[in-house]
Amino acid sequence: MKLYSGALSLFSRKVEIALYEKGLSFERIQVPFSQTQGYSPKDPAVLAANPKGQVPVLVDDSLTLYDSTVILEYLEDAYPSPALYPQQPEERARCRLIDVFADEVMLVPLRVLMHRTEPRPKDEARWIANEARAKDAEPVIAGHFGKLEDDLSGKPFLCGAFSAADISVFMAVHYARRLGGPSLKPFPALAAWYGRLIERPAFARVAVAIADADRELSAPVEGAFRD
Image 1 (cartoon, rainbow, N blue to C red):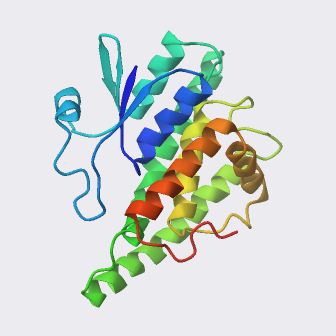
Image 2 (image 1 turned 45 degrees about the horizontal axis):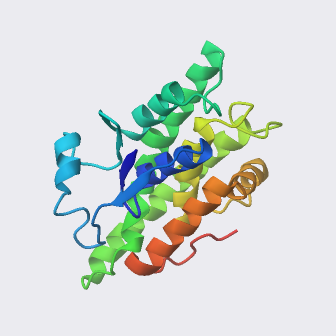
C-alpha cells in the first residue's frame, strides 16, 4: 500500500490517521511542497491518478483512489477491523454527514487563515487585508466550535464510539488551532474531546509530523495552539 501525501495537507493527514488507527502498513510518498509554490510542479503520479491533481492518493495493489473520504470508506470496507464507522445505517449516515461538515463547511473559513503560515508579503496592505478577512472568519469558526460543543455534550466521541467523524473534525480543529484560530477555552466538551484524541498514538504521531513540517516549511503563527 502506498499513500501519496503532502507534509501540510489536512486531507492527507486525515488518511494517515485512519491508516494508523487500523494498524495498516503503508509507504508514505511525500510530494514536493513549499509555502511560496504550493504543490507546483505537480507530482506526475498524482496527476495521473487524480483529475484534480491533489493529494491524498492511495494505491492498494491494483486499486488507485483519491479523495480522503472515498479512501476512508474503502479502508473500512476492505479492512473492517477495527471499525471506523458505526454499524447502524442511521448512525453511519450521521457519521458521514459530520465528515462532510468538517471537510466542506469548516474548511471554508479555515482557508481564510492559511496565509498566516506563508512568508509575510512585502506589501503590508496585502497582509492587513488578509488579516481583516481572517478576523471576519474567526467568529465563523467559533460558531462551528459551538455546534461541536453541543454535539459532544455528554458524549466521549461525536458518534458515540470513536469513528471517522472524529478523525475528520479533529483535523479541522487542529488546523484552526495551528492557524491561530479561536481558543477552545469557551468550549470545554470540545477541548476535552480534543485532549482525548491527541493522546491516541495515531493522532499524536500525525500532530508531531505536522509540527515538524511547520518548523521546516512555515512562518510562525502568532496565537497558534493557544488555550
